[in-house]
Amino acid sequence: MNFPRIVLQNSKADAVRRFHPWIFSGAIKQKDPELQEGAIAEVFSASGDFLAIGHYCGGNIAVKILAFEPVTSVEKLFLDRFHRAYEVRRQVGLAESDVTNCYRLVNAEGDGLPGLIVDWYNGTAVMQAYSLGMYEQRSQIVECLQSVYGDRLKAVYDKSATVLSKTQSTNQYLLGEKSDGVVQEYGHRFSVDWEEGQKTGFFLDQREHRQLLAQYAKGKRVLNTFCYSGGFSVYAVDADAEVVHSVDSSAKAIALTEDNIALNNPHQVEHESVAADVFDYLKGCDPVYDIIILDPPAFAKNLSARHQAVMAYKRLNQMAFDKLRPGGMVFTFSCSQVVTPDLFKGAVMAGAIESRKAIQVLHSLAQPADHPTSIYHPEGLYLKGLVLSVE
Ligand code: SAH
Image (tube, rainbow, N blue to C red; front, side, top):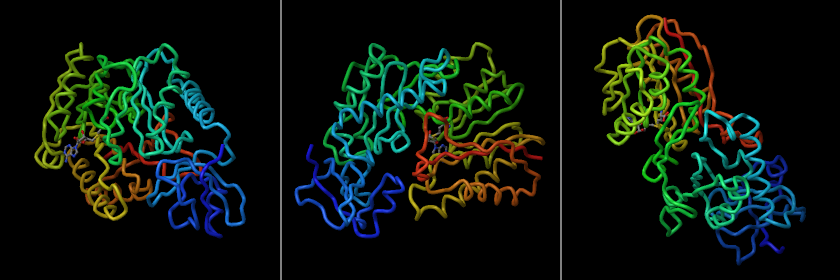
């Protein structure tokens, strides 16, 4: 096949030779005049060596690379990547599990498919394309999903319009139709609303950390802040916590939490959910908790907001340290990509200093195996967490 061509500046080929999956606009020396956003283009060094092939995106990240060798069939490339992604999920015990039927199948750069997220919810695949090139390949993406899952694939919901302003389209089913949306995660049941919910409907990236919480929650008084659909709360209730309180500022999230607790709670553990701002709630509540979970939304979406975010993490963590009973624990997270693990730990430490308590790090956490990162693309790491024991 003949693809449009992009030629890089002299010094800019090295990053591509180190397999970094993005080419920034400043690296481009020349490109075919007919090259349109969304097209697949081949990238060459100034001396004419083939470097890569990828989606031309037009913006600051000008190319998202699909492969570092020539490609004769894009269809085959996509099929291979999807089958490989599935194989990894099978390898780590998620696909074909008896207790879990929801997981991330495609994690963008981490699976060699920059600009594409696909989450699997027990028969429904929910996709989000973050580039026009990926978006334009959605019928091919459906074919790949059919090839991977066969009859197990009941529906494909495209939720790209939420994240990709360039498309004129709306979110819609590309295959099949709406189902009840009930999934299982480590045997816990959740009702997932991918059409109206946040992200693709559920925060799959916290699965292993919810499971970790379950190990500690028996008989404990647990506060789950920024609870969204109650993921941590359900695990705490099922682990026979003494009391679980869930807090989120969104009334919709509180309703989802109540639904999910009702789906799982035959033990009549005391659960209460509160629609409130977490900072206000923490200010006003008594220091009665054994475990507090802090899982806020990304406080910083870009570098310019990073300092503010660090200050907010500091304040939030300090408030939590003050609301624990002696010997309590905090599960604290950051999903801001621009806040590195060291920076996050520093912010939590600053909050700890203010609280003047002895605090131990029991676990350092990161995103799970179905949210892999490419070793060549450290930017793919976004989720960081610490589990702390507080004097
Ligand atoms: N822990 C959740 C995911 C959290 S997503 C899970 O495991 O599923 C972040 C949540 O924080 C969202 O539901 C959002 O509504 C809520 N939120 C954002 N800012 C808030 C604030 N200041 N106070 C309370 N909730 C907030």
